[in-house]
Length: 85
Image 1 (cartoon, helix red, strand yellow):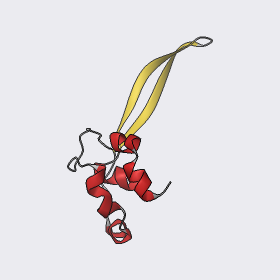
Image 2 (cartoon, one colour; image 1 turned 45 degrees about the vertical axis):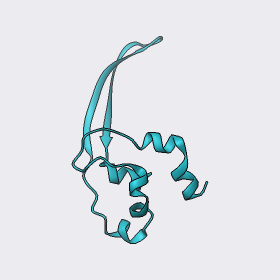
Image 3 (tube, helix red, strand yellow; image 1 turned 90 degrees about the vertical axis):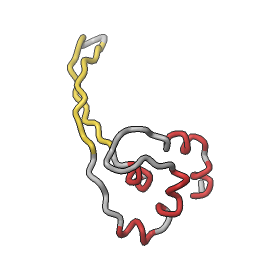
Image 4 (cartoon, one colour; image 1 turned 30 degrees about the horizontal axis):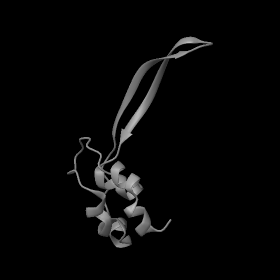
């Protein structure tokens, strides 16, 4: 899949409309296309820190019964997540 096909893929566009809070402004993937495809911009880009927290929940397993699970969740800033994609 080429870069232009990837930017036009409906699944990718729908996934890019994330609405979680972060330090940067919410933006759309189509608006960031020129920025993220330019290698000079990526070389000089200052990445924001992750928003990180631990999700704790109980998981039920048929053989072991109730089991405590912990999962680390990390959110990148909106522009950073587009670069990582």
